[in-house]
Amino acid sequence: MATSSEVYDAANQLDRIASRLQQEADAFNRKRSSIVSAVKDLGDMSVDNDWSKAYSSMRSLVSELNNAVQNARRYGDQLLSQEQAQRRQRA
Image: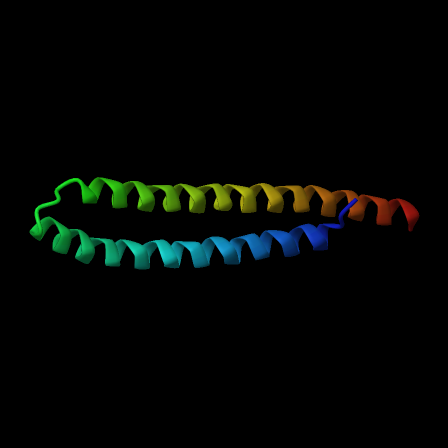
């Protein structure tokens, strides 16, 4: 069984991944706007929908990662409480 420290470390790592993905999604969205404008100028009006779907998928993944971080931290809190209770019983 993992310790609370290990769970918190994993949650922090997930949080860093989510933050990095959020940065990438934002950069992607900025690039998307300029590319979509250029492609629309060439006459393809459907390209925005595809790029919007990709950006939406990235945002959904960020949201899922953030939920996983919250769940891991809650689990870490539970483990920490159990560990503290065990220490008190031994003392």
